[in-house]
Length: 126
Image (cartoon, rainbow, N blue to C red; front, side, top):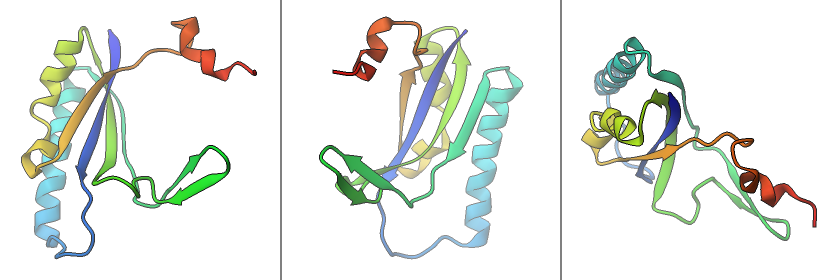
């Protein structure tokens, strides 16, 4: 089986009304059930949410507060799954709770750094 990463994005929201504790619990239950279903089938590899605190570093010692200061969407977390094919990984993503709330799921194949010598060419000292 290969590994695939699902990257969860949502619109960047500032201010506004916070969901109630009951609403948050209902959303958390949806996520737990979805991830639990993936794990029960032996396809779970790992997951984490991402905090909104961050800094983006760019060339020439430029830094920007926040990991998404210049975009309308923010990456809220990720899930790594195991699947036989890319299409199988996409099929798992179709029932992601993030899609119920206007978010998106990007599915990407994970490539080991030693799988392709060209994947680490950017590390060469010039």
